[in-house]
Image 1 (tube, helix red, strand yellow):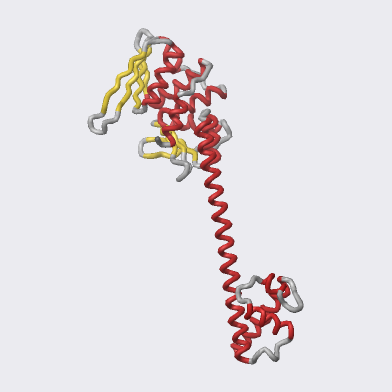
Image 2 (cartoon, rainbow, N blue to C red):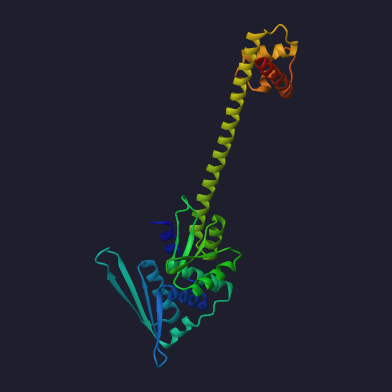
Length: 293
């Protein structure tokens, strides 16, 4: 099952205790996947269409729990794809409460966002990328949803995709927060585990790359130092070198791969890293002058 599927399965099993929250969630589900029809006698007819069984089950449960009215479900199978389409029908004057649902309390905002994601949301596999989105048919609907999400200190944005408007989040930390808002706590923990593993891998890779670069730099410097010292030896010899430079040159030839700190420590008169580095730099400058001559 995809990560989106896991989130929706979890959300489908979540039922708010308060009636106003159930109305807010139903309101989102209807706006995203259904339609209202109101007759002259004030009777309201509700039709919701979805291809997701978890969504169909959640709508049926919410209608039963909130209104305790008769609800009909028709399942139609697509002859081409083999997938099932679920059509949910309900009627009654009391269903006007869904259309008139007020989404102001924090708990109702959570429920509305939960219903919107259940109806038309998706999320990418977090091991590959961080992307959370909810597709809306109308710009006004998308703006309303974006404002609700951003009321939780998030930074949702809208992008137009063909004829739809997509409310999306791309930051891993913000997706964790929106899962918490929707109360998808199991999915949240799974996402956090993925984020921790990715951060660990990235940290290890950064350290390895840094160490590799330092090693390459050290090796390249040592090779250059040895070449310069050999050039001096073959050109003028070591006899004319000051004692300190001669000792450093012989040490580098004897220990071509030794780090500067170790190289300075093995001298007859040990010096620190900066001391041995200064002597080797003097030797390189001398080799350059000899080459120019």
